[in-house]
Image (cartoon, rainbow, N blue to C red):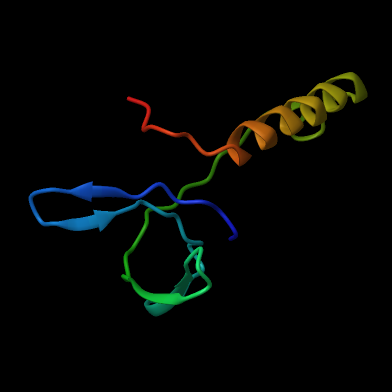
Length: 92
């Protein structure tokens, strides 16, 4: 996914830990995580089951008016820029 991960050292286990997300469509099993130095590192994706449900919303939320579409596009760019910037320290 070409995202930066923040690793922290767990002093109890003496391991480096990071949290990453994978697609729900990812097949369980080993996958390569490409490190910053270009080396692959094997990580295991575990199988799990997730509840699903249906959501019904009014049409105005599915097909918003043009003025709202403009605002949605502007806010999408703001969020994209915010999430593209890694944090130096974890936020609590």
